[in-house]
Image (cartoon, rainbow, N blue to C red; front, side, top):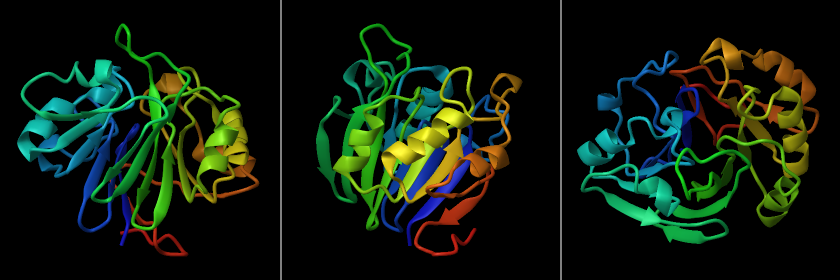
Length: 226
C-alpha cells in the first residue's frame, strides 16, 4: 500500500510499506505541523531548495534515522554534519531500491548562492508522483507530463511565493495529471487560500485535499484516509 502522509506546509512522506521518502521536512516552527520531527522515521529525505521552510529539520532527522539526503549539491551542502548524501542535478534520473527519482526544474529562488530549485518525479509503489516544490507556472510542465504519465501531482497553491490557485489549475492541465494534491498554503496569512476554490478550478483531474496530520491511501480508488 502506498500512502501519502501530510505534515503541513510542503512537508509530506511517501511510504510504500518498505521504504519511506520524506520531502522538505519543515516541522519545527511550522504552525500547521501536527507531528514532532523526533517521531518521523524515514529512509530518504528529498530537499527541493534551501529556504528554511523546506530544509528545516533535515539534518536532525537524517542523523537520527541514518537516512540519505537527495538534492542539488549546493543545497545538500547546507545540511552539514556527517550524514549521507546523493547529489543530483536537473534532468538526472536515479534508480533506488524503491524505484526511481528524476530531478526536474522549478521556477523559484534557491535560498543559497549557486544553487537552483528543483522538483522531483518519483516512481514508487507502481505510481508516478510529481512534486513541483516551490515554483511558478512554466511551460515545460507540459514536457514533464509527456515524459511520465503522472498519477499524482503535488503542487503549491499559496500564491505570493509560488503559483496561486489559477496557475496551479493550469499546471494540472499542462501536466495531464490524473490526481492533484495541493500543498504550501495556509501556513501563514500571506499564503492563505481556500483549497475548495482551487478544486473548483480544476477540470481535468481529481483534487484530493489532505489536512495536516492526515494520511491518504494512494492505491484506493476512493482515496481512503488512514
